[in-house]
Amino acid sequence: MIERTDINSVLMQMRELKAQAQLQIPNVNFSAKESEVQNVQKSDFGKLLMSAVDKVNETQMASKNLATAYEKGDPNVELTQVMISLQKSSVAFEAMAQVRNRLVSAYEDVMKMPI
Image (cartoon, rainbow, N blue to C red; front, top):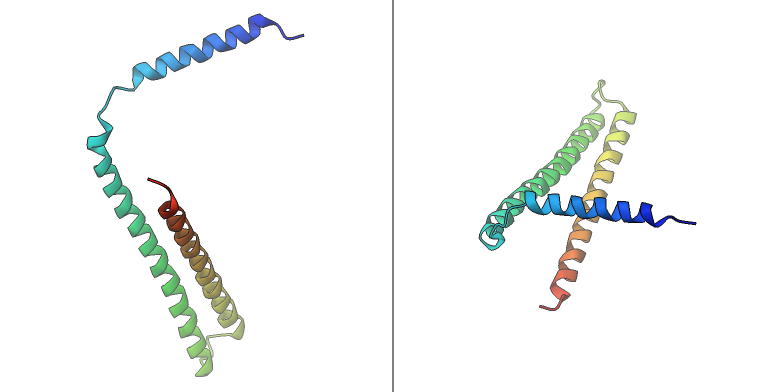
């Protein structure tokens, strides 16, 4: 059998925590700050996405250069290096394509939402 005193003490603690949290959060006009937050998030997300695309491009260029060097007969480049590099670039490209597909899907879902 559950004792009521335990439940009541838990409820009291929760109410006290709620009151403390409300006292610590000042009333701020969020509509004025909203545009600033959106601008920061847009630029940070854009930079993050651009750096990811650049990294995938670098990986693909490095694997292409290794493959070209192997084809020319460079003794310092082994077939295993070329194959691993090609697989890395393939996986990176596939991951980037999946991220793009998820972003497009999320955008379409947001656009379908009623206003």
